[in-house]
Length: 342
Image (cartoon, rainbow, N blue to C red):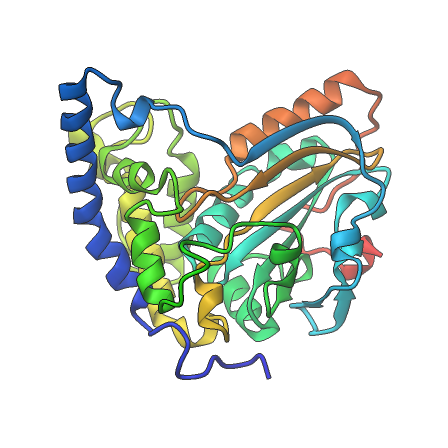
C-alpha cells in the first residue's frame, strides 16, 4: 500500500526544521571557508573546482534502457502500471524527449525543478520536445503534487520505491553506508556533506544572483499565491530596494518559503513510505529524435538539481548539428493523453 507513509517515515516537519537550521549553519560554514582560504592564499570555496555530475553527451547511441527494463512505475492519472523503459527517449523515436526523474514529491528539488520546467514550456514546444516526469512516491502523492503545483497528471508517473533512480545510479544521499536516521542525513546534506553546492544554493536564495533570471521564480510565486500559499500578495517591485538586476536578494528565498508552506501543509500526502527515500536524489535524461543520449544530469544534492538552461543549450546544439523535423509537442498547459507515450 503506497497511499500513506507509516509513522516511522520522515517526521512531518523534518525538512522544514532541517532547512531552517541549516541556513545559519550554511552562512557560518561559508564565512569560515572564505576566511580560512584567504589566510592560506587559496581561492574561496565558491571558486574551487569540484567534480561535476552533469554529462552533456554527443553522438552516443543508446537504443535501449536496460537498467529500467524490469522496473514498473505507475501513471499518476489512473494508477496503471507502466514499464519504465518505455518512458525514456530510445523508445520514443522521431521526437526529442526529456525524462525528468524527480526526488520525492515533498522535496524542494522536485518542486523547484518542475517550476522551472513549466517556465520554459514554450521553449520546449518550439524545439518539438516532449516531457515525462517520474517522481518518488505513490500515485496518490503524485496526484497531490500535481494538484498543488498545477502540473498535468498525464505526464507524471510515480516510482514508490525509487527503483528507477537507484538503477540509473543517481545519488542515494549522504553517508549511505552509515545507519543513521534519514533526518540526520538530511541535516548533513544541508551542511554540504555528500551534497556539493548545497551551501552555495542556500546562500543564493538570500544573496541573489545578478546573472540569473527571476522569471521562473515569479511565475511560481504567482501560481502559489493563486493556490493560497503564503505569501499571497507580493509583486516584483517589493524587491526594488535590494536590487534591480537579475535574481535579487531574497526573491528565491521567498519562493522557497512559499514552497515550504505547501510541503508542510500536505506532508502526509506527499511523503514517501520509506524514510531513506527522503534523501534519494534524481536526475535527467534527454534523448534526441534518433534515440541518442544527448544530455544526462545526476542531482548533486539538496537544491542542486538539473540546470535547466544548460539542458536547453545541449538540446539546441543537438538540433543545430543534425536534420530535425519539429514535431507537434504537447504543452504543459494542455494536458496530454498517455497514448502519446505508447
